[in-house]
Image (cartoon, rainbow, N blue to C red):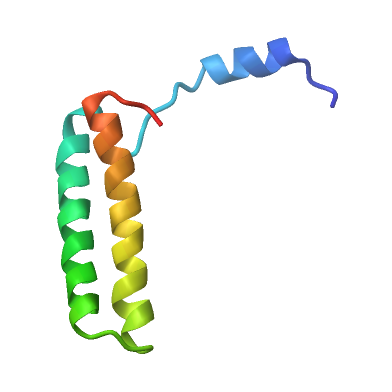
Length: 79
């Protein structure tokens, strides 16, 4: 690499990190994702088939995973 760590540090100082979900709305986003995940998971549990696997189970698992991460961030426990 031709750029030093100091140059990278100085370049990063000009563009601060702005999260996609703000600190004030992390709890709401986490709660919505968890409710959506449990709802889709419950619907998949009622009708388990290969067709509903990508339609219900995959989005449910993603919503639960991101909901748990956002919930930890909202209460101040960083993963």
